[in-house]
Every structure is written in C-alpha cells, then in structure tokens.
Image 1 (cartoon, helix red, strand yellow):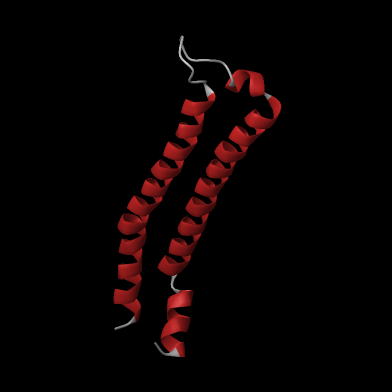
Image 2 (spheres, rainbow, N blue to C red; image 1 turned 60 degrees about the horizontal axis):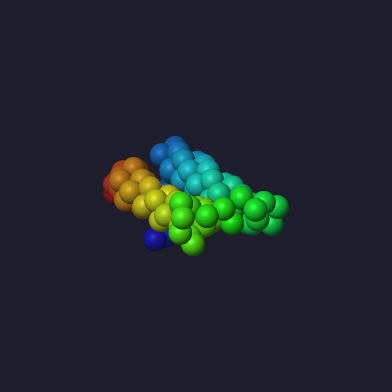
Length: 102
C-alpha cells in the first residue's frame, strides 16, 4: 500500500470506529481475565481454608473446580473474542478496504 492509501484509511471514520471498538473490547476482556485470575490467586493467598474444604466425602477440595473454572473462563472469553473478531471486526475491515482501496 502506498502512503496515501494508508493515510486515507487512517482518517476513515469506520477505521476509527473499528479501532475504538476493538480496543475497548480487548481491554474489557483483559480486565475480566485479570480479575478472575488474580481473584483466584488472592483466594489462594488469603483463604486457604476455604479452598481446602472437601467436596462431599471424597478427597477433592473446592479449589479444584474453582481452578478449572478459571481455565474454562479463559477458553470462553477467547472464543468470544474470536467470534466477534471474525464477525464484526472483519466485516468493518472489509468495508474499509472496499471504500479506500478503490
């Protein structure tokens, strides 16, 4: 791409909208992940007694399903991001390129 095409794309309102939406969404998901992950770490650090409570009569403690929940949460928010990126973000990118590269 030439510098003029790059400048036109950078000034396009749809590009600015794409950038704003993508950044906000990415930071929101990152904040959610940090809260969940560091919440779990804080629980390990400050409330070991709760995490060591057995589930039923077995040897599995409550910390195991909570830890698995953190892993599942990570997979879910990754899927959410990929779905939105492949849908809305890619659609906006296509529109921008169709308008500006002509």
